[in-house]
Image (cartoon, rainbow, N blue to C red; front, side, top):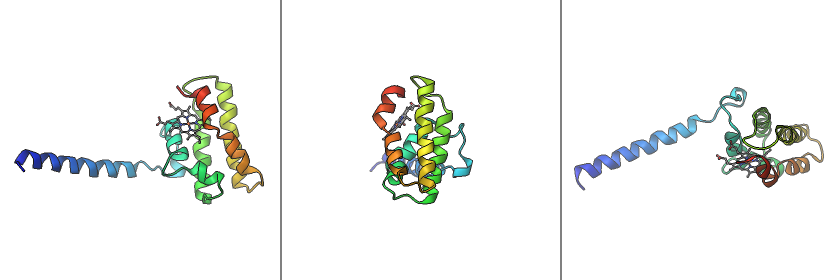
Length: 131
Ligand code: HEC
């Protein structure tokens, strides 16, 4: 191995470490979430994508109270954003349903999980509001 290869490997390793640290830094505490630091994309990533998938866990009754509160905070912020596409009123209706359903889960209402699954139809919202 020549010196340049060694330099490259070292640089890549350093880069990998810093990006891992950055990724961990990104978790904003629930009470610090704001419209400015939490985009719709960030909500999607945390609530709907692996590894967190708080929505799925919640709809299956497998989330903790903390996670449910986090989901609610994320959806509340999402509701205040303007959608990248589509009718603003329809967006409000959809996002408010998500907020209401998550509140119902937290309150332990019997049909809340069903409400949440219904309110979180990925395809219908993406067709209307995702570019
Ligand atoms: C209430 C509306 C709504 C619902 C419900 C919804 N999405 Fe989204 N989703 C959006 C919008 C709007 C975007 C585009 C955001 C942007 O481009 O800023 C998006 C983007 C995404 C992205 C891309 C994020 C990125 O980084 O580019 C993923 C992944 C995603 N959604 C997953 C899901 C999954 C999985 C579900 C169902 C479990 C779902 N979404 C349900 C509105 C919704």
